[in-house]
Image 1 (tube, rainbow, N blue to C red):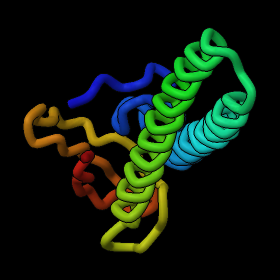
Image 2: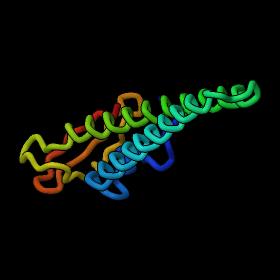
Image 3: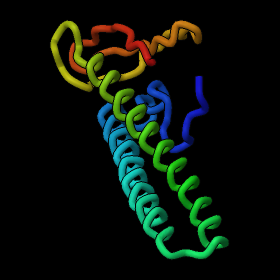
Length: 136
């Protein structure tokens, strides 16, 4: 598994600390912040290409470095945006209680989870039905 951003808690820790709904909102906010970063980096990329026009050889070399850095940041931020968005949506699709259909009213179950199975045992706060959410 790739190293996670310390600002984005894993699902089990997020449910335990702030609850599912707030964890989900924070994941979406983080993903959209990455989208904004990708947009700003793409604008910087376009501006770096524009700066090539009429530049000296040294300036063109510097602009090439700016193009590469801007392109790298754009691709990384876009990839991170899509990952965080899809991860949050995948967890949200599993947050409906199978018994009473309540959405997002989860608490962690007291049982121990298997680390390789990546299952987060949860219980519904409304009807106390227990199931596991598979964290991808």
